[in-house]
Amino acid sequence: MHFTNLTRHIEIGANCYCIEAAGKRIILDSGMHPKEESNAAMPNFDLIPDDSVDAIILSHAHHDHLGTIPVLMRRHPRAPVFMSEPTRHLADIMLHNSVNVMTKKREELDLPHYPLFTHRELEKNLRRWEAKPLRTRFGIDGERLSADEDADISFEFFDAGHILGSVGTLIRAEGRTLFYTGDVNFEDQTISQGAQFPEGPIDVIITETTRGDHAQPEGFTRTNEELRLGKAIATAFSRGGCVMMPLFALGKTQEMLAMFYDLRKKGALANVPIYIGGLSTKLTEVYDKFAQSWPRKKPELQLLDAVAPFVIAGRQADPSIVKHRIYALSSGMMTEKTLSNSFTRRIIEKREHTLIFVGFADPASPAGRIKAATQGDDVVLDANMEPQKLLCNVEEFTFSGHSTRETICAYIKRVNPGKVILVHGDQPAVDWFNDTLKTELPGSEIIRPQPGVKFEV
Image 1 (cartoon, rainbow, N blue to C red):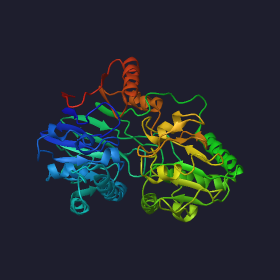
Image 2 (cartoon, one colour):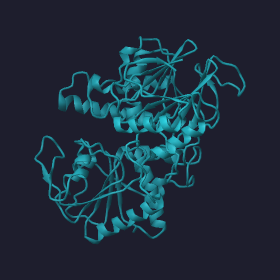
Image 3 (tube, rainbow, N blue to C red):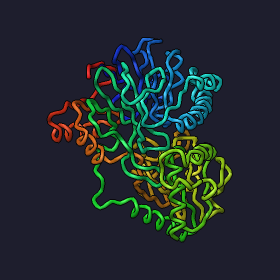
Image 4 (cartoon, rainbow, N blue to C red):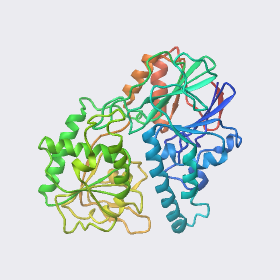
């Protein structure tokens, strides 16, 4: 059994990994790097001969795991793509939106290779997408296997608790077991239940390390953080302003809508208008569709009906004349020319408004620059525009969709694999996992896979 890291750098980017076992080749995920363009945004597909992949497995529908699936499928036209049923619906929406974004970038940035794929190609790709249920073994030909049935190589999905449809993947081959966590959260969120991963013997674990660079604050509880958020929103309204909350359209938006619902029921949030974007609305419809058929909290809750958010486009709301409103808009990083970026540019210099961050923001992103600034500083939100003075109020909260480093390590220690492969993390995060697991699992080999290097596992 061999492993190759097809990402180009040690960081959170275009996640993509190759497993070779039992004479077969499987690709795990095929993401697009959020900060790069064209070929630099893709995994290093040249490391794998064209038309040599037997199966592609998609862990979930976030862009850094999904965004180049059509390009990979083009290079490997015989390979089926396996995923969960919710991911099949979410991925369709996300990739069609990606075509629209890349088409705009082609015009704005003069990128002749964009879009990397088309709407028509995506429609054809759907024929090779195969949705599979949780906790059921399948051969890489897609055929269901019984629990004790022999097979050269098989896979099985487990709920990863990250977003709707996210899975960890257990691969059995050559008498060994390999488990890929994908993005995982072992703790319950507002609407997503904590991961339910296999506890039996596992020889190799490939684990994400996203939050490895910082510890969980002592005494932190999600319930207290939710109540703190409700108080911050109420304080913002007392100033006569609105609340702007940059969110990822997939996952974070739905979690926050469910949180708004809970806070209203507790009397901790007034029944104020809430606004989201069009992409967020389409994705929330999928959350509502699978409310009772995928593991989750509040299966009876239909978000669009219960919360009743309004849908806006970039120029429909004027913060100079509105107050007591919540704008939960994408993107979470406030990327230039997104809804959250354009809206924030209109409130950042007005002291009555409040900007609330509820998750990670890359330090180099507009959101990251605001989080690093102090009130009164000049901040660049768009490279083509003049810097703006940060005068609005800024608040930060922790509602991560990723597990803490402590809970991931606890799972790995329980399973006690022979080898642990550390992926999906910036260098400090990977280093912490490496040092900690080497100390706490002295009998296991801890591996930091270098990009492009093939090795035996």
